[in-house]
Length: 263
Image 1 (tube, rainbow, N blue to C red):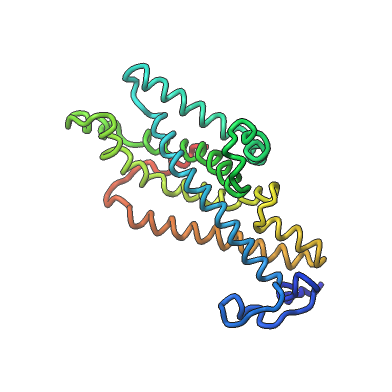
Image 2: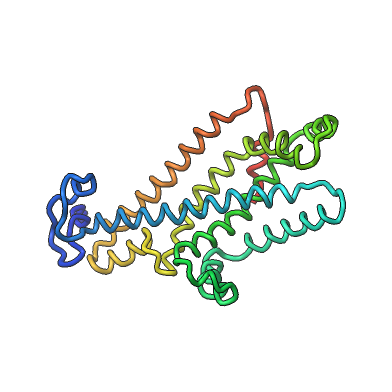
């Protein structure tokens, strides 16, 4: 079966091929009618927006919860924080992401009324961020625990408080160690963003489903969407690889591979 790659240049209104299909994306021309290519690029933008916002939430919460899980037993407060962070991780990583999306969209706003004012892509991003934060927290915990015990002892010997030890000694090294597993989680978040179609966020998966029904060219449509997902994940991989090279500690041999053994 021959592929009709011109399908993306057809109008979403009447199915006729539009002029200046590709040049319009570069601002070199304008279409009288929107094409499927225009729709595809907007859907890609929504996918990147949902994934980017979810990643920002996941990185912040994951770093906090992962750090709290490794606090030393210095009293009731530290034990409470350890239990709280452990509960957070076990709760959010053991509930399927699609269920969490439905909970944030249909259930939680009924109890937290201000959430009703948020658009659906925000709610999906929060669900993705919380789900991924639990997984990233395990990476952070593994990274901290992979450090030689002498690092913490040296910080204590210098008179640093627990907070100062984490800020100046432990976290700067642990976060460098766990960049490879964090890369995998970031790429997974790009793929997991496809669940946004379930609450009508106009991202790539929803585009593919609707465009396939309208055009009956599912092979071409899903091929284009697959390439954009792969391109997005590859871009994240390259950015994280660049960060890893720039932040690598010269001469330090850590158990970075052990950090990747966390769930």
